[in-house]
Length: 215
Image 1 (cartoon, rainbow, N blue to C red):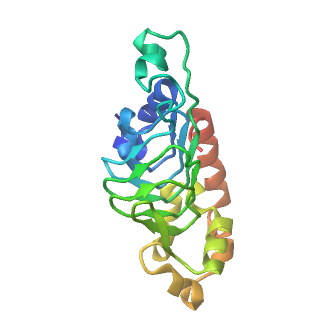
Image 2: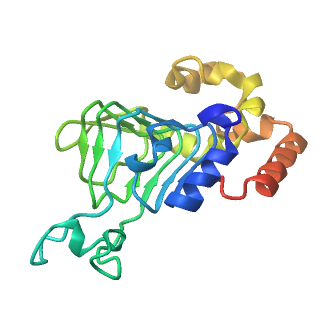
Image 3: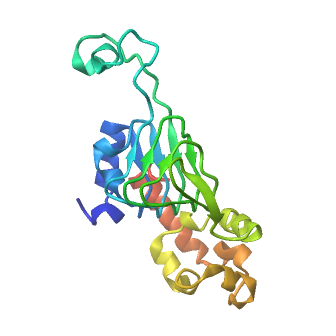
């Protein structure tokens, strides 16, 4: 596909149209393997997902006479309708999910900026910018202090094209909490105002006209 996983609009349209999985721009990894994520999964921009991450957004029916897929999956031709509801899963922007992670049914949201450690088994929602690990996965710490997290969520930096971010790489290539505390060359809370507003508007228009499914 053109531009590979980071940039391909075609790959994203195929996954949305045929697998009900939406993937934001610049996100890469196991989410592009159709069997890794269930239907009605939406993943934000700039996220990094290991190749072997698996997400399950429905269970076999414990209350049926049998838990076998013959009796709830119409693709196997033994029943005429899908008997088990899919639980939508929303994965935010700038999320890092490590190798071997399992996301179980019942998880509805993994917040923006979250990190999920290797081999974790996620059984509940994950807050923004939380670092979780273990089986079951639990919050180990937050990536930043509360005011920094609030500022990052308010800035919505992930909505910007990577080429518009390029002039501001200083903010992305060093520990950010230190930068926030007084080294930033401009007001971190008003990051978007330092961009070329005409360039932002032009980029947004191109995305919406060509790839309406990418948020």
